[in-house]
Length: 445
Image (cartoon, rainbow, N blue to C red; front, side, top):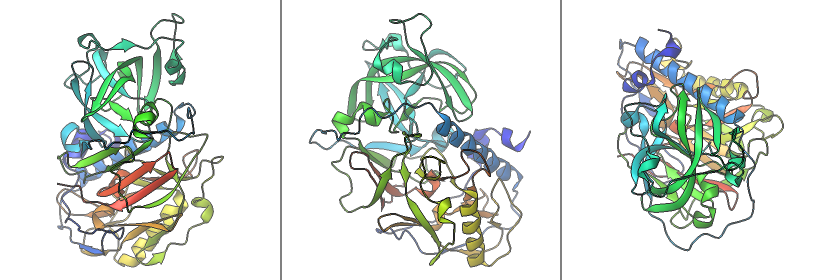
């Protein structure tokens, strides 16, 4: 079996060992830590598993940059209801569903049918496996439209049908609206429908989503997905009059199996003291959350990188996005090379051979320097060791948990700040006011 063909479940079962909890209430998340691997641990399976996830991250980035998401339906500020909304518990999908996404419990239909759906801020459309879906995971729950008294299909010719990528209406106006979509390394066919959607006690009437009929590949979250991107069919757009195009999340450490993280909807109940950076808009990639990362520090020193490798440019596709569906941060090649070299220079210990797509690994005790992302607006986010290093399951080796993006193509200039680097932080997406915020919050239990 090739490294890239290793099943994700195997990758997830042997991935990491717990790290020491870090306590802090500021954006200075942690000081440097010493990492002491256990010498002589078997590494071949771990290396293969990390390579598999690295390949999955690459496929995901390609798919979300080539998706046919439509433009935003409005740029006007909505008027949310003046009430606090119950937070939605979220958990890492690793232990529960063997997927890298974070998940929430969703109730779909009347009476509600419970599904564990992936929460994805870089996708728009929601979709769930429906009964008799070909290629869907047979062992996972699916949604049965015939068992819901409030389900209805969305017809061709409707505004919603015009907003899905690659709509299919072979029978003409009035027939059921179908569409095709690519997600990471998978493709699927779905029928557009509407039904009641509940996240915790947050109920949305007539939510538009895709009912999966045919799936090819194994990258699709087995119980469905809700997109929190900025496109017209995202949760944010469909509920803008209720939640004001504002949400935030705190991602627990993905080794946890508890629903200790939270997804907060609406402006009320968000952190009052939070440092924010401007949210940027790319008309060619309107769904993604771009921010202006202006520098990176390793330890106390700013890494010397070409500003062109960090600058936001909608024409070339360069810039930085925040994404919770990609597991490991990917940096444009010149940015990563500079960070890697600075990191090695601070550690001052010979590196072990590359493993699983990571090229800065150690099999002896090392002192790990902090890594700080610097954003416009004097916002800095300093990562603790648990957000910087990936450990083999036996503790035999530790690697810098970042990698270079592709050397050429449309994705070569993109920096993706991924979920491992966001865990145990509150990340705020305030689309109505054009800002993204970060504050330290320990939500791992």
